[in-house]
Amino acid sequence: MTGFPPETFAFISGLAEHNEKAWFEANRPLYEAGYVEAGKAFVSEVGPKLRAISSAVQFEAKINGSIARINRDIRFSKDKRPYKAHLDLWFWHGERRSWQEPGFWFSLTPTAVFCGSGLYIFEGERLDAYRQSVIHPRSGKALAAMAADLRAKGYTVEGRNRKRMPAGFETDPDRAEFLLHDGLFATAEMPLADAAKPAFSDTVLDHFAATWPVSKWLLDEVVD
Image (cartoon, rainbow, N blue to C red; front, side):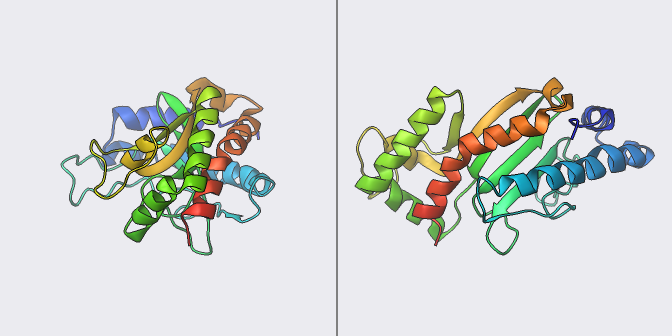
Protein backbone atom coordinates (compact mmCIF):
# COMPACT_ATOMS: atom_id res chain seq x y z
CA MET A 1 0.00 0.00 0.00
CA THR A 2 1.35 3.43 -0.90
CA GLY A 3 -1.20 5.36 1.10
CA PHE A 4 -4.51 6.49 -0.29
CA PRO A 5 -4.58 7.73 -3.91
CA PRO A 6 -5.25 11.34 -4.96
CA GLU A 7 -8.78 10.32 -5.98
CA THR A 8 -9.67 9.70 -2.34
CA PHE A 9 -8.80 13.21 -1.22
CA ALA A 10 -10.40 14.78 -4.30
CA PHE A 11 -13.63 12.88 -3.74
CA ILE A 12 -13.92 13.47 0.01
CA SER A 13 -13.11 17.19 -0.22
CA GLY A 14 -15.39 17.66 -3.23
CA LEU A 15 -18.28 15.89 -1.56
CA ALA A 16 -17.84 18.01 1.57
CA GLU A 17 -18.34 21.12 -0.56
CA HIS A 18 -21.06 19.72 -2.82
CA ASN A 19 -23.06 17.24 -0.76
CA GLU A 20 -25.81 16.71 -3.29
CA LYS A 21 -26.92 13.95 -5.62
CA ALA A 22 -26.16 15.83 -8.84
CA TRP A 23 -22.50 16.32 -7.90
CA PHE A 24 -22.20 12.73 -6.68
CA GLU A 25 -23.57 11.26 -9.90
CA ALA A 26 -21.36 13.50 -12.02
CA ASN A 27 -18.36 12.30 -10.02
CA ARG A 28 -19.28 8.64 -9.64
CA PRO A 29 -15.99 7.47 -11.25
CA LEU A 30 -14.16 9.44 -8.56
CA TYR A 31 -16.30 7.73 -5.92
CA GLU A 32 -15.54 4.29 -7.34
CA ALA A 33 -11.79 4.92 -7.47
CA GLY A 34 -11.27 7.02 -4.35
CA TYR A 35 -13.85 5.51 -2.00
CA VAL A 36 -14.81 1.99 -3.06
CA GLU A 37 -11.59 0.67 -4.61
CA ALA A 38 -9.28 2.57 -2.26
CA GLY A 39 -11.28 1.30 0.72
CA LYS A 40 -11.12 -2.27 -0.55
CA ALA A 41 -7.36 -2.04 -1.03
CA PHE A 42 -6.80 -0.67 2.46
CA VAL A 43 -9.01 -3.28 4.14
CA SER A 44 -7.39 -6.08 2.13
CA GLU A 45 -3.95 -5.00 3.29
CA VAL A 46 -4.68 -4.10 6.91
CA GLY A 47 -7.21 -6.83 7.77
CA PRO A 48 -4.89 -9.86 7.57
CA LYS A 49 -2.15 -8.01 9.45
CA LEU A 50 -4.62 -7.12 12.22
CA ARG A 51 -4.90 -10.80 13.07
CA ALA A 52 -1.40 -10.59 14.54
CA ILE A 53 -2.95 -8.25 17.11
CA SER A 54 -6.29 -10.04 17.55
CA SER A 55 -6.70 -13.45 15.94
CA ALA A 56 -10.49 -13.18 16.18
CA VAL A 57 -10.88 -9.93 14.25
CA GLN A 58 -13.18 -10.05 11.21
CA PHE A 59 -13.24 -7.98 8.03
CA GLU A 60 -14.75 -7.94 4.54
CA ALA A 61 -13.31 -5.74 1.79
CA LYS A 62 -16.65 -4.56 0.45
CA ILE A 63 -19.39 -1.99 0.96
CA ASN A 64 -21.57 -3.00 3.93
CA GLY A 65 -18.69 -5.20 5.06
CA SER A 66 -15.72 -3.30 6.45
CA ILE A 67 -16.51 -0.29 4.25
CA ALA A 68 -19.43 1.81 5.46
CA ARG A 69 -22.10 2.89 2.99
CA ILE A 70 -21.68 6.50 1.99
CA ASN A 71 -25.43 7.20 2.04
CA ARG A 72 -26.80 8.83 5.18
CA ASP A 73 -30.05 7.73 6.79
CA ILE A 74 -31.98 11.00 6.65
CA ARG A 75 -35.44 9.66 7.47
CA PHE A 76 -35.49 11.04 11.01
CA SER A 77 -32.77 13.67 10.72
CA LYS A 78 -33.05 17.42 10.33
CA ASP A 79 -29.80 17.27 8.35
CA LYS A 80 -30.94 16.23 4.88
CA ARG A 81 -27.52 16.03 3.25
CA PRO A 82 -27.59 12.68 1.42
CA TYR A 83 -23.98 11.56 1.90
CA LYS A 84 -21.31 11.15 4.58
CA ALA A 85 -18.28 13.17 3.55
CA HIS A 86 -15.79 10.73 5.07
CA LEU A 87 -14.54 7.20 4.50
CA ASP A 88 -15.31 4.89 7.44
CA LEU A 89 -13.81 1.43 7.82
CA TRP A 90 -14.54 -1.18 10.50
CA PHE A 91 -12.86 -4.38 11.66
CA TRP A 92 -15.05 -6.19 14.18
CA HIS A 93 -15.19 -9.17 16.52
CA GLY A 94 -17.83 -11.88 16.41
CA GLU A 95 -19.34 -14.08 13.72
CA ARG A 96 -21.79 -11.44 12.54
CA ARG A 97 -20.72 -8.05 11.18
CA SER A 98 -21.84 -5.48 13.69
CA TRP A 99 -20.93 -1.96 14.77
CA GLN A 100 -22.24 -3.06 18.19
CA GLU A 101 -19.23 -5.27 18.91
CA PRO A 102 -15.74 -4.12 19.96
CA GLY A 103 -13.35 -3.60 17.09
CA PHE A 104 -10.96 -1.34 15.21
CA TRP A 105 -12.23 1.69 13.33
CA PHE A 106 -10.81 4.15 10.80
CA SER A 107 -12.20 7.43 9.47
CA LEU A 108 -10.72 9.63 6.73
CA THR A 109 -12.38 13.05 6.80
CA PRO A 110 -11.85 16.24 4.74
CA THR A 111 -9.51 17.64 7.41
CA ALA A 112 -7.89 14.76 9.34
CA VAL A 113 -7.68 11.01 9.84
CA PHE A 114 -8.84 9.19 12.97
CA CYS A 115 -8.46 5.59 14.04
CA GLY A 116 -8.62 3.51 17.17
CA SER A 117 -10.27 0.67 19.01
CA GLY A 118 -13.28 0.10 21.23
CA LEU A 119 -17.05 0.37 21.05
CA TYR A 120 -18.93 3.57 20.20
CA ILE A 121 -22.03 2.94 22.27
CA PHE A 122 -23.35 0.31 24.66
CA GLU A 123 -26.91 -0.80 23.91
CA GLY A 124 -29.44 -2.49 26.16
CA GLU A 125 -28.03 -4.88 28.77
CA ARG A 126 -24.51 -4.21 27.50
CA LEU A 127 -24.53 -0.81 29.26
CA ASP A 128 -25.35 -2.37 32.64
CA ALA A 129 -22.67 -5.03 32.13
CA TYR A 130 -20.15 -2.29 31.38
CA ARG A 131 -21.06 -0.36 34.53
CA GLN A 132 -20.77 -3.49 36.64
CA SER A 133 -17.26 -3.98 35.27
CA VAL A 134 -16.36 -0.37 36.08
CA ILE A 135 -17.31 -0.74 39.75
CA HIS A 136 -15.74 -4.18 40.14
CA PRO A 137 -12.41 -3.74 41.99
CA ARG A 138 -10.33 -5.84 39.61
CA SER A 139 -11.73 -4.88 36.20
CA GLY A 140 -12.40 -1.28 37.22
CA LYS A 141 -8.84 -0.70 38.36
CA ALA A 142 -7.55 -2.32 35.17
CA LEU A 143 -9.70 0.08 33.11
CA ALA A 144 -8.44 3.15 34.97
CA ALA A 145 -4.81 2.05 34.59
CA MET A 146 -5.29 1.31 30.89
CA ALA A 147 -6.89 4.70 30.23
CA ALA A 148 -4.12 6.52 32.10
CA ASP A 149 -1.49 4.70 30.06
CA LEU A 150 -3.20 5.51 26.75
CA ARG A 151 -3.59 9.17 27.65
CA ALA A 152 0.07 9.36 28.63
CA LYS A 153 0.90 8.08 25.13
CA GLY A 154 -1.18 10.82 23.50
CA TYR A 155 -4.43 8.97 22.80
CA THR A 156 -7.85 10.20 23.81
CA VAL A 157 -10.20 7.89 25.70
CA GLU A 158 -13.75 8.75 24.73
CA GLY A 159 -17.37 7.74 25.14
CA ARG A 160 -18.40 10.08 27.95
CA ASN A 161 -21.89 11.40 27.20
CA ARG A 162 -23.58 11.80 30.59
CA LYS A 163 -23.44 14.62 33.11
CA ARG A 164 -24.83 12.73 36.10
CA MET A 165 -23.80 9.48 37.70
CA PRO A 166 -26.25 6.63 37.04
CA ALA A 167 -28.40 5.79 40.05
CA GLY A 168 -27.19 2.88 42.14
CA PHE A 169 -23.56 2.95 40.97
CA GLU A 170 -20.63 4.14 43.05
CA THR A 171 -16.92 3.57 42.73
CA ASP A 172 -13.53 5.01 43.60
CA PRO A 173 -12.67 8.50 42.28
CA ASP A 174 -9.98 7.13 39.95
CA ARG A 175 -12.59 5.43 37.78
CA ALA A 176 -15.80 7.32 38.55
CA GLU A 177 -15.53 9.19 35.23
CA PHE A 178 -16.17 5.94 33.36
CA LEU A 179 -19.65 5.66 34.85
CA LEU A 180 -20.51 8.72 32.74
CA HIS A 181 -19.70 6.79 29.56
CA ASP A 182 -22.20 5.32 27.11
CA GLY A 183 -19.32 3.92 25.04
CA LEU A 184 -15.60 3.33 25.37
CA PHE A 185 -13.01 3.86 22.65
CA ALA A 186 -9.49 5.21 22.25
CA THR A 187 -8.64 7.53 19.38
CA ALA A 188 -5.55 8.62 17.48
CA GLU A 189 -5.69 11.69 15.23
CA MET A 190 -3.36 12.19 12.27
CA PRO A 191 -2.92 14.96 9.68
CA LEU A 192 -4.80 14.28 6.47
CA ALA A 193 -1.56 14.42 4.48
CA ASP A 194 -0.28 11.34 6.33
CA ALA A 195 -2.83 9.19 4.50
CA ALA A 196 -0.91 9.66 1.24
CA LYS A 197 2.42 8.47 2.67
CA PRO A 198 3.87 5.09 1.62
CA ALA A 199 4.03 3.77 5.20
CA PHE A 200 0.54 4.93 6.18
CA SER A 201 -0.96 1.48 6.66
CA ASP A 202 1.88 0.59 9.03
CA THR A 203 1.20 3.75 11.02
CA VAL A 204 -2.47 2.82 11.34
CA LEU A 205 -1.56 -0.70 12.43
CA ASP A 206 0.72 0.75 15.11
CA HIS A 207 -2.21 2.81 16.43
CA PHE A 208 -4.48 -0.23 16.30
CA ALA A 209 -1.95 -2.20 18.34
CA ALA A 210 -1.59 0.60 20.88
CA THR A 211 -5.36 0.98 21.35
CA TRP A 212 -6.17 -2.75 21.24
CA PRO A 213 -6.25 -2.96 25.08
CA VAL A 214 -9.59 -1.11 25.02
CA SER A 215 -11.29 -3.71 22.85
CA LYS A 216 -9.58 -6.53 24.74
CA TRP A 217 -10.88 -5.17 28.05
CA LEU A 218 -14.38 -4.93 26.58
CA LEU A 219 -14.22 -8.45 25.17
CA ASP A 220 -12.92 -9.85 28.46
CA GLU A 221 -15.08 -7.88 30.90
CA VAL A 222 -18.26 -6.74 29.14
CA VAL A 223 -19.11 -8.83 26.09
CA ASP A 224 -20.78 -12.17 26.79
